Amino acid sequence: MKIAMASDHGGIHLKEHIKKYLQDKGIEVVDHGTYTEESCDYPDFAAKLCRDIVSGASGAEKGILICGTGIGISIAANKCRGIRAALCADVYSAKMSREHNNANVLCMGERTTGVGLAEMIVDVWLATEFAGGRHERRVNKIMALESEE
Ligand code: RB5
Image 1: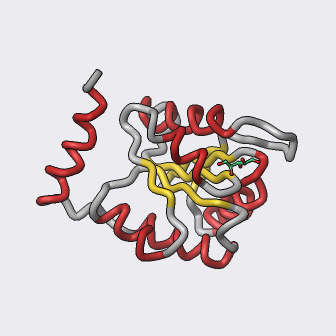
Image 2 (image 1 turned 30 degrees about the horizontal axis):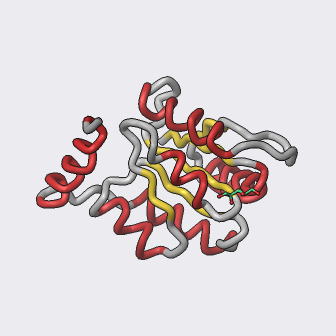
C-alpha cells in the first residue's frame, strides 16, 4: 500500500509521527512536504497531494493531509476535482467517511487531535472499504457537482 501525505507548518509534527507510524507497518509513504517548521500556506500542500492522487503520478490512491485544525487543508482539498476529503477527529467519522462517502483523502488537525487518537483514526480509515450500493449513487451525485458551472 502506498499513501501520500502532506501538511503545512501547523501539521508537520503530526505528519512526521504518522509517516513513521505507517512506515513501521510496512506502508510506503510519499511525502509532499512541508519539510520544515517555517510558516507556509496549506492550500499549496493540499494541491500537491491532490494532484498526485488524481493524476496517479506516484501510484498513491489515498492521501492524508494535516494542518493546525484540519479545516483549511480540507476546504482546499475539496476544491480539487476528483477529491473527496474528510476532516475526521473521531474514529466513527473516519470509518463512515470511507464506508459511505468513499473519501480518498483523510484530513486531521495537529492542534485538535492527539497522536494516539490520530493513529486509531488512520488505522480505521485505511482498513475500511467503501460499501457501494446506495452510497455509490450519492457519491456519484457529489462528483457530478464538479461539472456544474
Ligand atoms: C496555520 O497557522 C493554521 O491556520 C493552519 O494550519 C490551519 O489550521 C488552517 O486551517
